[in-house]
Image 1 (cartoon, rainbow, N blue to C red):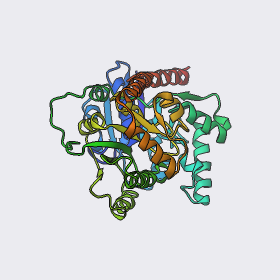
Image 2: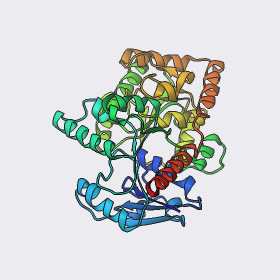
Image 3: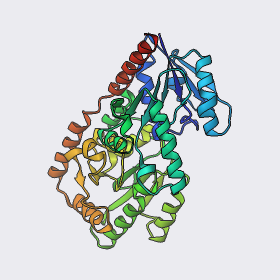
Length: 379
């Protein structure tokens, strides 16, 4: 039996799935039926654990006290994990307990916060120092793309030799939902009445360039290049959403740009099925999960082919040549004018590309890492 301690604090609000929260759920669910595994989830709000995990016999939940994050990371978590007699510690992000006596696995989704000017210079230096300390202590570093691995090794060459590329896993049920456009159940949030639309899914952080996308959409409408298209933004975040909402109002787009928050999975699948195009003007992606979702659902992708999207979307997307308003406008216009045969070819290319990301494959690889580290610690 391998008992795995899991930092599950990304499950923080019942019913709201963050990107890392979805990643964690998809990595654990395929493994809870394994006879030789047990997981102890450490978090502040037990009611925020997704029901399929909360109800699984192989899952135990340990409620953490509220306190400063670093105190919980480095003092509370290792002691709770030791008290629970765990064999391996798994963190779904780069943070992890440096002083734990058990093998440590950490996950790096991206290093946007070190590559882009998102933090002050002092905070960036401290974050880099802390991350370096965790990575040196980690026995295995899971990275979600080959791009993230290269990017990480460029800043932290000492990690070489202990990285494993495991693409962000997709849940079996979610994969089926995306593939099936006729489910016969009315969604809670419906795309009905939106007409033909471009769809964006994700947060509104600065490097996602949602403001650029909105401005380009406005310019394309003014030039009568996409007259009958609306723009749908699904997601957002508390910090950046107000600025995007204000921009939409400022540009007079309230009737044709629609923003939806906290959309449930079934409704989100309906948006993917109904959209003519999925579009992102993101400058940096560690993996690009919504692009994969769109391709599985048969929604062709528009993106800037850089960072991880080169390997995740490959040649299956319609490329934005450069991240400026002129090029985004040109690509939106090209998509809107594309004939059905060309669009169908992109849809089929996307479905073929999405087969690279088989549900449960990364979870099984993680299980193998846990077993190996457990056996090694007992040798």
